[in-house]
Length: 176
Image (cartoon, rainbow, N blue to C red):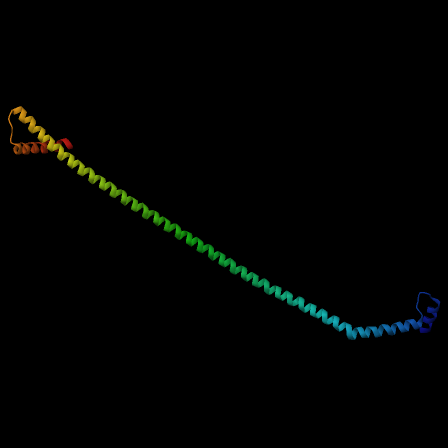
């Protein structure tokens, strides 16, 4: 068969010559053996290293993702706690402000009541003073008038008692 292939090769311009075929096959086997001995292990090692690096990167990325998720959860919890704290502080401030407002209103009411009380006391004192002054003037006028009508001077003490008694009798009827 080989002889036939050789005969066919001599006649066919596309097929290589037999010695070229043999030497090419031997060179290919030697090159393949060298590649298998020296190059393929290094390529396999490089591929293995690359696979290990990619796997490590994926593992690290998964750990980073988990850590980021954990950190995010912590931040969300802190944010929720901060919101609750701010709500509590705002509520306390509102209550405190309401208490201060109530205290100020109570103090203002007390001050107003004291002012009104003082004003009423002053009015009452002024009224009593005015009534006493009017009584004195009325008594004096009554004595003068009685002296002119009778034509003689009356005892001042006696007439004042008489006029005071009359004013007290008439006074409650006139005030009420």
